[in-house]
Length: 209
Image (cartoon, rainbow, N blue to C red; front, side, top):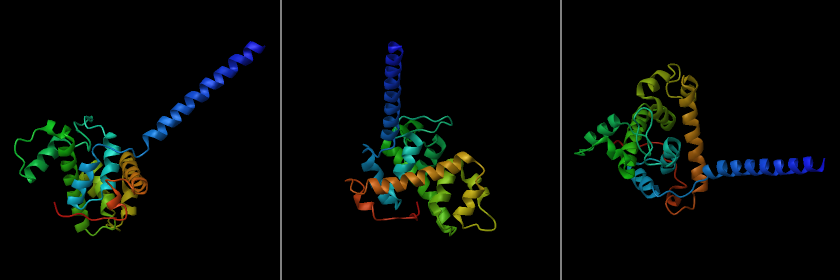
C-alpha cells in the first residue's frame, strides 16, 4: 500500500512538472523578446508611414521571426512573401537581378512585405474605410479579390461589417490575432530602445508606395 502511494506521488510530481514546463513554454513564446530584425522593422516601417508594432505583429504571426520559413504556397521569409509578390515589389522599386531566394534575406523581405501591405493600406484609405488596417490585413492573408467580396454593400466603409462578412474563419482569426498582438507589443515594448519613439503614435494610414 505504501509503495502504491509513493508511485502516485512521483507520478503527480512528474505530471505537474510537465504541465509547468508546457505552461512556461507557451508563456515564453508569447513574450515580446527582442529580435535581431527590430532595427529593420522600425526603420522601414517609419519610412513607409506604417505602424512598426503592426509589422512586428504580422511577422510574429507569419513566421515567428524565422527568416527561412517556407509556406505551403511558396511564401518565403519573415513576412511570407510569394515570388510573384516579390517580383511586383522589385519591378515597382526598380530593383534589378531580383530572385525569389532574395526573400530569405530579412531586410529584403521586410522591405517587400511592408511595401506590399502599405500599398493595400493606401488603397483602402482612398476608399475612406473607417479602419484601413483591418481591410488590408484581410487582403494580405486572403488576396484582394476575396477582400473586395467581403465589403458590405450596405456599409462599405465599416470594418465591423467587413469582418462579419469574411467567409474564411482562418482569415478572420488572422486579423484578430495580429491586431491583438499589435496592442500587446505597443504596451510591452513601450520602453524598448527600438520602439519607444513609436509607443505613443498610432498611424492608421499609409503613404502612397
